[in-house]
Image (cartoon, rainbow, N blue to C red):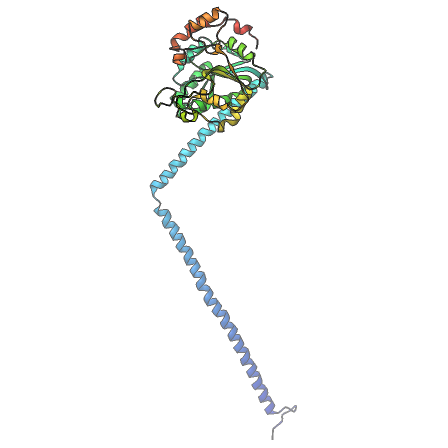
Length: 389
């Protein structure tokens, strides 16, 4: 018989309740331990992974550090020298660009000041010259090329004359400085972005026409050698007769033999392009002097990068016009001989525009003889003043 306490609850019932509570608590503790174990296990496996990544990063830093420490001082020094050389080249280019911009601004300012921003000229004459030709230039200045105020008056008349020269292979060297000093004295040079060299005459010709067209708007652009005598008024009169024609190529036309023997003067490395041995060139103006109209000069300027260069610049010029609708004007007054040839022609009333010796491709001993030719075959001193183009 069971004993009941107050309230009617027996001792047996209380015992069974305690057992149920103990089981529930045990189950709760079991689940709590299980989840705590899972959390603890994840924590244990996560920490080694982080440690491995940190270890790899440290190893990589050590490798980079070792690579840098192994880089030789000689390589570093070489890199510094390359950077220094590159900086020097960049500075040189910047100086040239600044000089070109200053020159262009100067020309624009001068034109604007005189109200001639779009001024039209009749002819631009570029006298091809070299670093070694100072005495030749002086002989030209002393004869047919006006100086000082006379040259300025000539430009007002529409005639521009400049000695044309590029730069030496050593930029800023003694040769370039000599030309700069001469320019300060006379102010009669057109400097080209071109490296001088005899085998580079075709490239120089292209650069000359491109530069001249950019600087002066003229009817005609002329190239002449510095060992040739020119009568400017006569030359202007000849060209004035072709002023209204499009695409005009004026000169003393010739068609000489293509020389295939290496070592001879005027050897043509590309002789095979002209057919069989003994063939002649196409008709082209002799290189001592030729003139082209503005549209042809512009054509050369626009297409300069695709125009082929032969070793002889007069051949190159003639080749650039093949296939174009160009009028070739052959005028023998542009290739007279020196006295007595030009002398007796002048007496007959046919004054020569250009005189030189064929055998020398210019006036033989031009420095000594230029004045003689000028006195004998030169036009009247007032001819240029009274000429109208």
